[in-house]
Image (cartoon, rainbow, N blue to C red; front, side):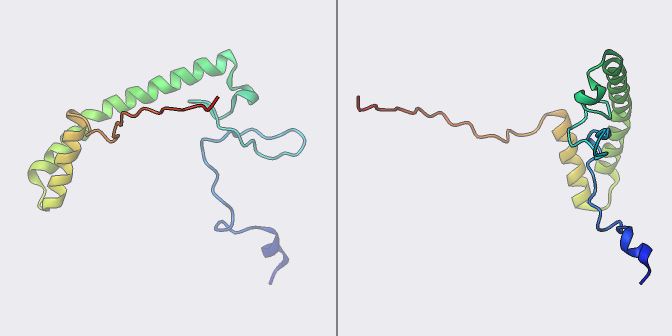
Length: 124
């Protein structure tokens, strides 16, 4: 066994870090920040995410991502439509039809609403 094998952890042993976490490091301990990064940014509010220039750049990035998704929507719908009509597997056709219905009509209600009344009797 070589000494360098002991010093370098293998990729399977290193836990995967969530990409939405802040990428800044602490000044003293040099550990990665554990806070969540702000929307459209790579750092949290403590490490500069609240600055005006960072907020404006993040809003531009979020707008660009939304525009990109809106541009892909017609392509996705046409692909689902072609799967509904030309797929050989019945389960594929059913899944595509279900996805089209979910996106056009809306999903079924997933919450059950319960009306209840709580009465508290105080002995005093």
